[in-house]
Amino acid sequence: MLHNLGHIVSFTKETFVPMSPDELDSTILNKLLERLATLTPIKDPYNEIVLLLAECSETMARLLVSLAGTFEGYALGEHIQMVSATFEESFVGATIGAKDQSLLLLMRLWVIFHDMGKPECYLATESVKDQSVYNVRFVQHVLVPALQRTTLPVSGDILSALIAMCTDSLLGKVVKYYTRPKTRGTPSSMTLPMALAEVPKIIDAFPIRFRHSLGHIILASYLPDVRSYTTHVSYITSGGIEVPRAPGALDYVFAGPSLQLHIPEAQEALDALIQEVNRLTQ
Image 1: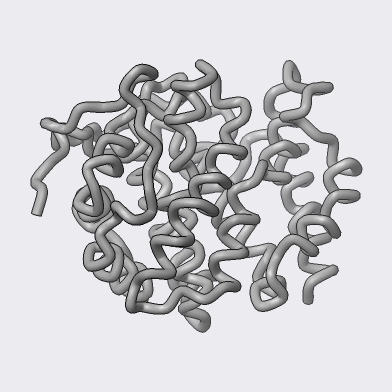
Image 2 (image 1 turned 180 degrees about the vertical axis):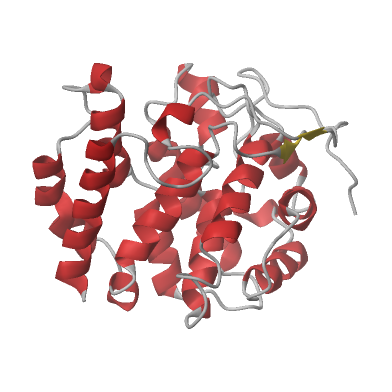
């Protein structure tokens, strides 16, 4: 068992190597899946997720310590920890997992793998603008084949939903419109009416099995992800050093340490979008 990743060398543009699904250790993946499928909260994502995942292959370990292309300079494994902490604290057992362990497994797989293509995107393009293309490609061509070789079954519905969740966030575009006016008129920002018109497409892209939970899924993926870029989370560096207060740049999005959005118009747009999703899926 690894104690930290301080000795692992991160990828550069010149040294990056695409991951093959065959190199991921099925025994380690089985162990990870067993943990993700239990209702017990993950309280130590560094040891329970990041270090365990790093044992799957050398390429995976190097990917986890590589930069995710963020303003804050987070490595991929650090970002995973922060998203996991908020998800576990705010959603597990409350709206996710209490009655549906398949939904819990889906969400935890998303927490871990939703940004796996980000380091490659950043190294290849010096930007993360097209990260969803790389993220979806990783899930489709690396993760899905690897999970299909494990002895613990992961349903096709979970894998299909995971791919759909790795595309651009509709909710994220709406919130950005109200919290970052400079993005208005760009592809990364969207008015509420525009987003509401897109909701049926989002629903159609999701497996029927999970559509009744889509409102919860959207909230439980977007909010923990954004909160990871605030000073209200902590993480452990690749070298095993605890950082109790992350150098986040998005504190302005939230009204303090809660998940309530700071700008009323943004919160109202979020609520309206989720309400429309629920109306069409319940």
